[in-house]
Image 1 (tube, rainbow, N blue to C red):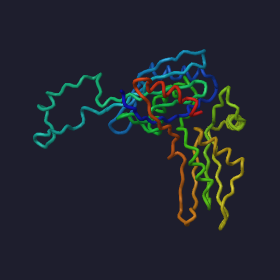
Image 2: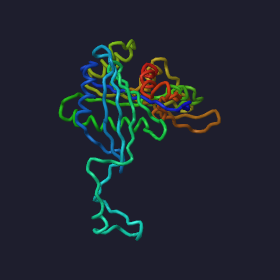
Image 3: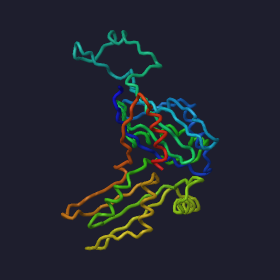
Image 4: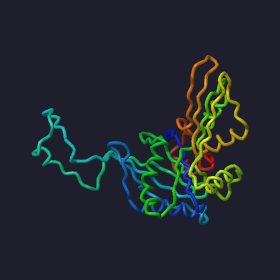
Length: 291
């Protein structure tokens, strides 16, 4: 009997400015895939959108699934070490090295599912020895998209990890809340998005030719901030994948605390039996959970 395998899922909000069309999101991911572009992820790693498939469903609603690739990407012209001599390798040593240009070591495939309708990308953040932090996945997609935006093929795209709302609860539960900074990037309301606030912010920022807005509050000396329901709603919008919330305050013991919701992505931790289901099945089932 197959053993249960644990996994962790995370999500990114992919917000494209007008047009707000699921088919444009589909075209965006298809364009990324067809470029076969490799980007740097740190000093010695590279990444790309390696595989892309379309699930069954009506146009504009069908999900897309695939794999992000991660691998070692180094410059072979960099100095090499000869472990036998403990010195830098010489030309004769390197003459024996024959690395095919099309091969990369330390290959990892990170499965994902993307919903063009909700513009949420749900991916495997951890499964076995495969790991990718939400911030790394966001940086990978941003770098892959850059040339498409630069050439004018697509408008500006904001990619933000969906954050854990429990961290926001910690902010508003602080006995003393001294400063509050809320950054909201221009949201992209879907056709099925009932949130009036999302539509209001999207419209307001678009009218001002703005891509984001910041709300800052600082408590009066000796006082604590008392965020209104409206401010709390804006903070909720930010952590849903449209920004971040930074707060500074004090605990009941008088200890200074700094809280950044960007440090706490929303994670779904679970397990599955590989004999009866697949990691892609778990991803497909989790799309609505991250909405």
